[in-house]
Length: 96
Image 1 (cartoon, rainbow, N blue to C red):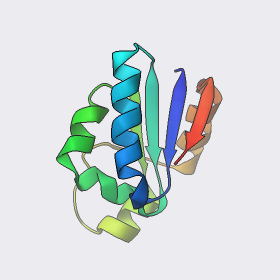
Image 2 (cartoon, helix red, strand yellow):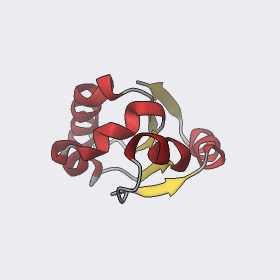
Image 3 (cartoon, rainbow, N blue to C red):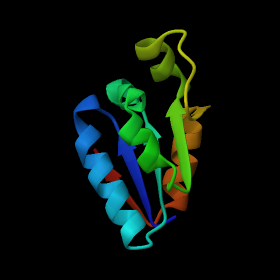
């Protein structure tokens, strides 16, 4: 994976949409890990459409439970250990 976007805040929604689209357009492999209140962006249909082009997409299970409660996650639930593994796989990490 060329780039891992590490989403930590809901305010990064538009950045993720733009960066994800740019990666797709330029044939750059990318993934995304969502944590903290960044998990809230997974309610946005535009974000979910952009994520269809991601190589890997994981959301922190603890953050999901904290901010989204009983809702079903649209992406794979994972731990901070998974986050660390994704960071090790990525050539670049961009924290949003």
